[in-house]
Length: 345
Image (cartoon, rainbow, N blue to C red; front, side, top):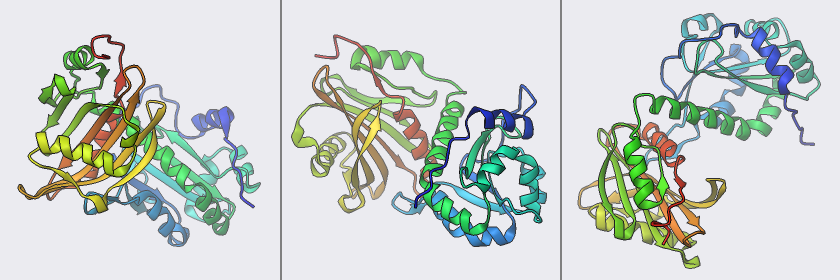
């Protein structure tokens, strides 16, 4: 029978604030890599559960080489102070005393949560800013190793999705701290009928008002966001048609880039609180001998019965592309329509 884990609720937050070193009103921001996670668990328990935990957080993506979504590094608890200024932590344990990490968690986690763990009512919770600002921590506890593996198997997708959402929200904050191009954003709203947040070091590489086409680009490495509008047609709502639309536009503006069919998938996603189509795959340019990953969102605007295509792509030979894709995903997620009679015709 599948277990249902209850939300710890506000009482847990109150206890966590007291128990987990959260008395300070202000904390300096954490340092290090956004994608790197330090794991603290007793060594025998970690050997028992690490394959499933690593598989969940690695969550490989095709760029076209396989890249991990996050990296994990196990450390003994004695190293916690040394890395307490870093970005991400996972604490794994059981409620059985007698080991270093278990004893630490039993003293640190609210007793009400421990009681619910022993009753199979709770398994994990998140804690922001555990030691420093902008930190993300996950605490996962079960009454024994067998129960831990069962509970993690049932909740791992939710845990990953919650962690990834927090990671992207933090990434957005850090991306726009250095500046934002308000004038360019207002220009797009006035002339194209949508807004999107633009970091300080992107530039408007190309535009075509007749095709409602915009190309925002950043160099080193080369990555970009393209947006264009096409008239709505239900015949477009399939993988082949959307790939053809993208190939037509990239062929015209990007020297012949094409989608790699067998490395591309179509899915339906929630975007702007509405249903959208998302192409996830890779592109290549045979004449230039380059390629890389892309994502393309297809969003319907009922006010002008049009489809807007928000396309992000990276070209970064010899470098990991996932971090740059994540930055582009953050920018794409800020896309929104604005009321503009001139652009809704």
